[in-house]
Amino acid sequence: MQKLYAYVDETGQNTLGSYFLVAVITTEKEQRDALEEQMEKIERESRKGKRKWIRTHPQRKVAYLEGLSGVDLLRESIFYASHQNRTDYVQLTTLTIAQAILHKAEDNYRAIIYIHRLNSEERKRISAGLGKQNIRKKKVRG
Image (tube, rainbow, N blue to C red):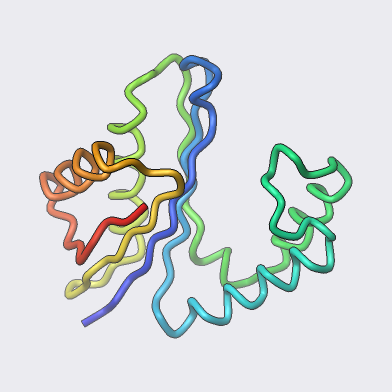
């Protein structure tokens, strides 16, 4: 059985619907550790560190993104969707997660999904939405 990990983050709720972006990195266990090591190395080299994106200096953001562009594992693992003039954030997030998982999944899989800044109500709604889309998930966590 294929074990997938999905890491989800979104941005744009503060634009009140004018722009909303959801990014999902899907990876298998064997690739997960190597990917994490590469990303942490790029955080150090770019001097971005563990700072929140909004608190990161623009030059460090550019250096970090340039570093990420050279990570082959991300080319095979990153999925994103952008939306405009929509405020149904939970539904859009659920749909993007489902698309990302189905893009990477084999016939027999289970997914563990980690979503940045997820409260318990949103977790329940996203988990139920993924179930309705026949996504085989082991768990959804914030």
